[in-house]
Image (cartoon, rainbow, N blue to C red):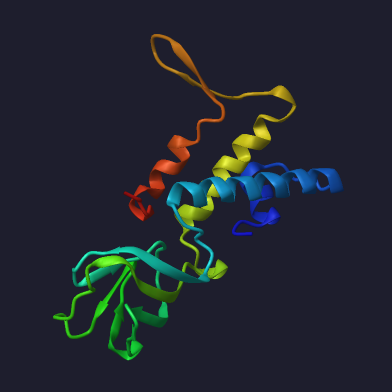
Length: 181
């Protein structure tokens, strides 16, 4: 898991450690991680991928389905294997080092194996905090409660209700999203 129980305890201020509480907190963290991964469009944990690119665009960049690409293991264009030492890796795309070679136009004609995502120790803090915020809101909703916060102003006061709408917690991740078309 990206966020640990100890991090969750510290963030939420709930240090209950009974087996049932730990199991529930683990479920909240796991669910929050799934929500974040779904919103991002990829699992931020470092892993290996093998993708068949649905449509080669004829451009110099090939955008892939994950961020923080760290290496390319294999690349096949049509039936031709490409020497991966000629491939340059960027955050969310690959290109050729010579800057003139383009990826061919066609359907399902490019197969790429690569490693992307972050190791737990290097996970961007915005991802970790988003997971902790969502899990903490889930914890506050247990037992039929709803997340309430209040704010007093000079002329009146307002109560804010937070429940199951994680958009404001996910919004800081917008720049990291992989959007499908």
